[in-house]
Image (tube, rainbow, N blue to C red):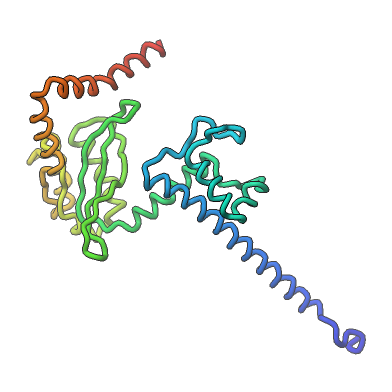
Length: 262
């Protein structure tokens, strides 16, 4: 038997070679998929950098205007043969669906949050297009090069605008941002001058400082500038009428929507 198999590959060696080929092909496929995904991520980043909407009104293949994101992907594919081949032949994962866009945005947001070194926090209330009250959370911190950075962190949905509700929502997010042993890193908190926010005994700033002792309250300078500009321009009739009309738009559409539902 040894003489019969002399000079031939053994079964074990053949299996090892087949296994090695399989691993090599798998690695090549992974590298190709990473390349394709990186190009799609670049298109998402480009839209974000210029504050452009990703979605189009009609994203079908026959659409003349499928949206900026799809247009960018098609343009990049015209310059990248690997991506072009993928878009033409992919049957399971194409990478351009709205679900994939949302997942990429969520992943990029998670990466951004992980790299933020928290030093200060700002918060203010705003109303979205559905007239739902939201808390805007902004982090101000010092990066590794000692430069001051200010980054939007999240929109937080509020069930009410009481001090307890706002403070509870902030503390839930701060618990994730700052672990128990890093509470001292929060050195300030900046809000507007409303009593619910700046109250010395029952305001949001007091409730936050009870948990984060170093988080001293500072009246937001951006809000102070806004008040100054608002006061200065309120004496101009056209400007005053414009902003009054702008403030009434959400209420108008909310009433219109209620009538439609009824």
